[in-house]
Amino acid sequence: MTSKNLSMIVAMADNNAIGNNNGLLFHLSGDLKRFKAITTGHPIIMGKKTLLSLPKWPLPNRRNIVLTHNRDNKFMGCEIVTSVKEALELIKGESEAFIIGGGSVYREFYPYVNKLYLTRVYKSFESDTFFPEIDFDEWKELQREDLHDDKNDFDYAYLNLERKK
Image (cartoon, rainbow, N blue to C red):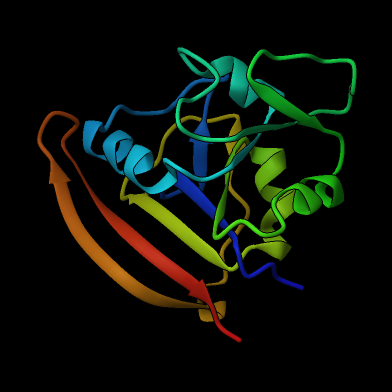
């Protein structure tokens, strides 16, 4: 049962790797700019570890919602939820809301997501955090931009996907 206004945004390596030691696997400045452009003005939902991994939080010009098992957690400028259901209730009426990580939060919300904004890096990385397996037959490609990063020396693509009905 997808939620029409719920999207995920993620940068993922070939091996579905998204992070290691609570940090990013690579630095793509264009991807960070894309993330900011897409999510600004919209609610973002993340786990506590993802919030704490950010250099500065809450992320500005976005409603920051943190999913945590401990309702007593307090993070300045953030709303706390303890379940997927509670988060989905909070975003009712929003034009679009974004799941931004981490791994367990992506897994919990994956069945509800209608769109994926995927940065696909064509290289594998050592990782301890992974994105759920994507069955690309379930998704329709809306937009694709293939790129190469000279600094990191790898190819990558921006993909906008929508779940098929």
